[in-house]
Length: 328
Image 1 (cartoon, one colour):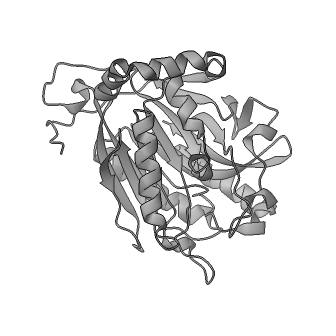
Image 2 (spheres, rainbow, N blue to C red; image 1 turned 90 degrees about the vertical axis):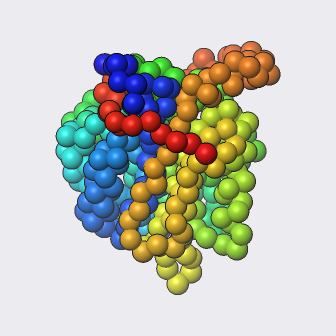
Image 3 (cartoon, helix red, strand yellow; image 1 turned 120 degrees about the vertical axis):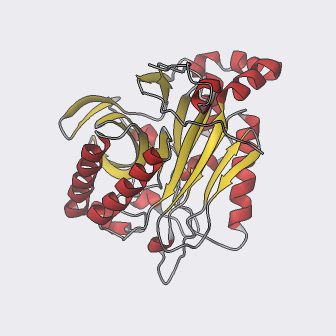
């Protein structure tokens, strides 16, 4: 349970510390990718973070193309997930990582939310890009195609599955997060817009997002504006340079924004793994939503839609940071 006896602990003042990781990656090598993810998870816990985000399809790498339809790769991804789950049992950390997952005879691009060896929920990608250099519809099905609302994975049963899941901390209900994947942010009305109205204060985006001229500036604009409109924190991570081929390149761009303000950013084009840390003021976000009465009016207009979200409750132990933070 959360204890508020220590004044010099940021978790006792409405803050949380989060981490955004860009692990070193090898295409179609779930064992290697899982190990690098675990390394960053351990580092995040050492830094007293309670939440860590990793890239889209990070366990397999994003650029596997038609290898996604090979049984060996899908089985390897599940094996890699099992290794990460086992390592997470000893970590006081929620981790969100990406992998392909077969459900109802369809293949989905998923975000897996794990905590202490348990899968809290699985979120399939809502919008699949199939233009310019992207052709995800060749390999994956969109979230709307899913029939099941719960799945069994690696011996764990009845795991919530779907695009409208809110993950809420029992000890601090202001800490409620939502997961969307890459292209979900690039559409006119992102799923996170509804999620914020439904109660999410933290939005997570697992992305791969290759690099083109000025694309990093556009990412900044998208994430900044979405965090401002939603009065939320927004964590974004793109795949690293290990994805790069003779056709496309990746820069490992990770961002953390809070209500339109840049809080943290990664170093782009690094060849090794990196972890970006940031503190989020959840109390500030909650108070801003109370003050901005149009936020409540937007909720009122979309009540029927918002009732469609399912809440996944989890318990955690907030670490003692031993000092107060200094922001901006």
